[in-house]
Amino acid sequence: MTRASMKLAACLALWLLSCCVCPAIAGPGTERPDETVVSNNVLHLGIVPFTSTTMLLKIHRPLRDHLSRVLGRTVHIYTSTNHEQFLNDALEGRFDIVVTTAHFLPMLIDGNFVALVRYRNPLEFVLVVRNDSDIHQPKDLRGRRVGLPDRFSLFYIAGMQWMNDMGMEVDVAYHMVEQTSHLTALLSVDAGWIDAAVTAGPLWLQLDADIRARLRLVDTGVAPLPAMMTLAHHDLGEETVAKIREALLAFPDTPEGKQFFATAGYGGYLPATPADIDGGKVFERLMRRLWEKRPPAPYQNHEIPGS
Image (tube, rainbow, N blue to C red; front, side, top):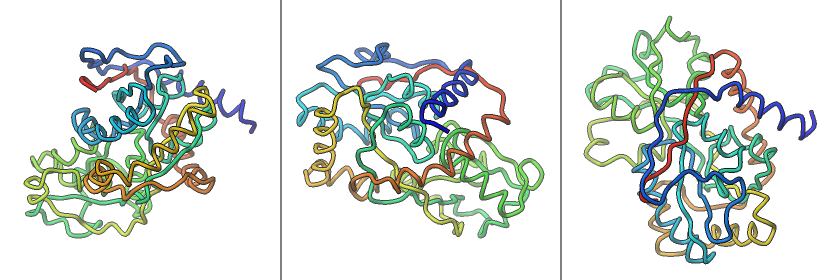
């Protein structure tokens, strides 16, 4: 399939999914960017919605400030209501820089984004339960309520595949409870609303210590998933894209960068390689199967107040 036909297929798939129910949230100075090419003075940094908007802003504020300082341009942080809408927004050119998970990489690169860097640490696949839970191994999930993040997230796709590989059919061997984010899933376990949650290692580290003390990890035996990657839109121009790459690679050596990577658990940056991009293709194929099986539902953009 040619790049043009792949892009057309991606856009058609997104169009079929573009009609849903989550309200947009916006704050002063964070209106949705309606232009596909940003102004010369502002860059829109889009971050995949793996946690709450408050947590996203808290974690990435040092990165935003570093990019603004080094590039001499205002940087605003944006996200979307869910992973499906994030991909849609990115392909429409609403973000200049994106931080995303591996299953979106092939489509984003085909949609005119340039891969810059990836996090050094891959995403550890973990299962979280309460300390007092009698779940000690994956087979104990039979008959339980298992929380997964929203249906087009990498960990929903990987989690469903993991359960299928164990011979556990959804709504037969266990009950899948879709969550709005990783953070929601973890808080739902803590509250006792679900029995277990599939999540990413960094999200576990980013939990408040008092919450983490009430929970524990169960070994899944699943190999780590590909690391998250940062991309920039080709329309920014080669010079600007190169400056963004240089600014990102310099960030881990700054005091703010050292704190960011220690807190977030990402380990630093490495230059992106073709192998990193290829690592997302198997998950992209699984994501497309979900599109075929699930009816579309409209969503709206979700922007981070005060970013």
